[in-house]
Length: 610
Image 1 (cartoon, rainbow, N blue to C red):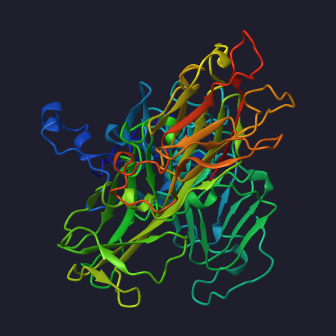
Image 2: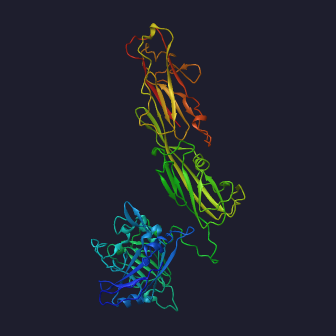
Image 3: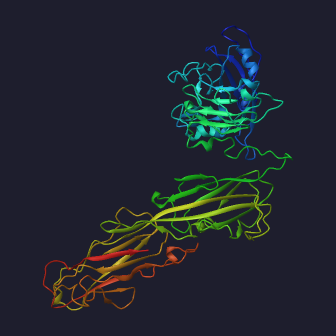
């Protein structure tokens, strides 16, 4: 609503001014004029009773995916009418309660709820707009408008407040705070009739490509007050923009100028692009017909099953999920849910997708998502049929192997890309890349981090019997346990007499575990060294020697193995068993062993490859 207010000057006179919005007020600083801009939601109308407000429809930040716009006139003639000595302007925004949100128990101005604000500066001509100490953008109202450049006083008493801290920044000059940048992206400073002072002739304006300084540019930012920044993208249709190092780069927005844009050693925020007007693509389109709006795919919201890692991405972004968080489901399902957010959607439209398994699949066919047309501004993605399959498009890439006392592990990353497109209809189930006519496109990358960990027994014991006094053999079965859920820091590897191998494999990655007896010595009475004595078998195969006549043993391939064949949505651990899953070790009884009261312990060597 356009909340107009009146104000009675306390100095230098007691003139009662007419109701207006903005409200023009002479500041206690004689050369500063305060301009209070009321941005008030109808729900917060202070001129009616609370009962009426309770019956009023709540303010919504967007309508059909687009934000509202308000235009405000900053009239130089009125500035001087209210304060003939004014040389500077303090622009003070007064946002009503609907634009605030609670955060950590504190009420914070939420820039995402703001409408777009166009400030139309008029009546400046060749007088220029020279941003200096005394000029600034602030938060306040008609009771809190007194200008100050003292940070210790800012926000106290009836003084102005900092925009940056109002939106949640740690201090008044935190230029890279996301909310500060978003605030700047919602303002447009339109200098409608401001010219360079050395090129002022509205009837015969000519482009001037040289000589622009902070004294001649239509808009200059050569100094500032402590505790403020220049907010909003500057539109200068008849002149130039000049900035130097004295402002410390604290301007939050872009610049569009008809003549020069001069940055004379003026620093720029590393996040400057995020403050350009309309950056979030929510600004209403300007169409010749006025009725047709272009559909856009604005973002995708992704969540793991426990909602520990919620992510919202613009097109081109990357979503990262990690099994170490303990929330993802075992492959292939993952459990990740997704919702596409769209705006300006027609009554119905087609939604298609294709995978970019190698990061560049611009020739691949497009597949229709679901059986028919879409109608809403949000589309829920079924993780079992889309996001899980996306994860299965590529093999995992492995990092550097890590070894610990009983564990061998590889960090794994699976990265896959997907692209969405909307079309006028959803008649075709599949459309070739050169045939599709898209109305909007969107792509993102899904990165899944995990690890393959194999934990092995510290040793395998064959008991303390004097083997030569018996017949037969001593056998040890190594139990194999492959799991997909997060295991303890040290898995249960059983006992030396009942050993276990534990494989943590959340992505069902292919691997090969090899085995060897590495510590044979020259003692002929060592039962593990005697040629062809110590044997093994996998599954039901006949036992064969583990360490033939070689002092350093021999690596045996395929002790435990999973194929690297591509997964599908049906690939689950239960219906795709390991190629080798049972290992038995055999030590026959013989009467020529060295007699010992110690247990016969086989120091085994393990090797993991992908």
